[in-house]
Image (cartoon, rainbow, N blue to C red; front, side, top):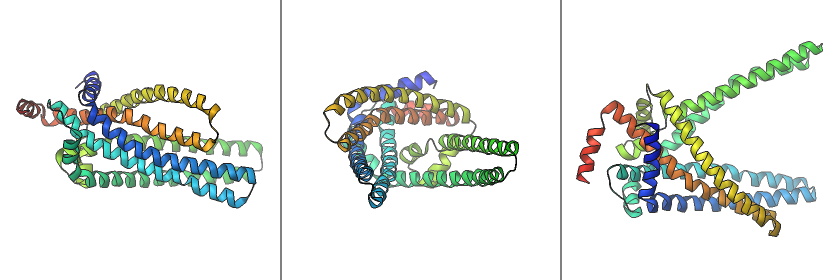
Length: 306
């Protein structure tokens, strides 16, 4: 499949079965949005009270409320993994010329729900460990260089030390980007492998790693392209929502309420782009299998039976 065919297929899969594609996305992200709205409103209200009262205890409570962002981030990650697995089945049906109802899609996906979540947790753990390793590798020399710069007796030595510290920070950022891109490519097909091949979490990670072998730059380029497209869609929708919120800000009596509403709408906006992105990833997965495993004849055979 060419890049154009991937994009066309992703949008066509959404058009063919919008009820299932968008129905699940909006339902799941609405729940995520409500949780985000609650924590955002609570955090904003606590911070406002802390700033107005100057009470250290109030400030401490506001920081505790801000920890809710970690909860919402984890919930968003799980919701995205759930939708990616669910929508992979819907895209597969669209490739075969079938149209699955929401009930049928859930009936077929439910046995794979736990493996998808476990695979997502494994990826999260791997990402966390590698990020910590990168931070340790670069932050230790960064602080050592800063200490030497602070104790330098001349401005030239101090300036050189600060320049070295900034160079280390730059290299650390580059390393983090490289790690993120590498993992994004190697684990891009994990959810599809769990759902469409019935693999366990560990086997799905190995399967995705194997499918991406020898295709790193092609997959990375396609991931960047779909990220740009969905980012543009989100940007346009976000601008519309921002204009609405700007009008509502004049009539809003509570800053917390406005922030909560903004968080809820942001979650709903993601429900617009997740089906397109999931469809694109599933088609990339099928494309790699067609290139390396001659999947096309099997697809044609299955489609003739549909």
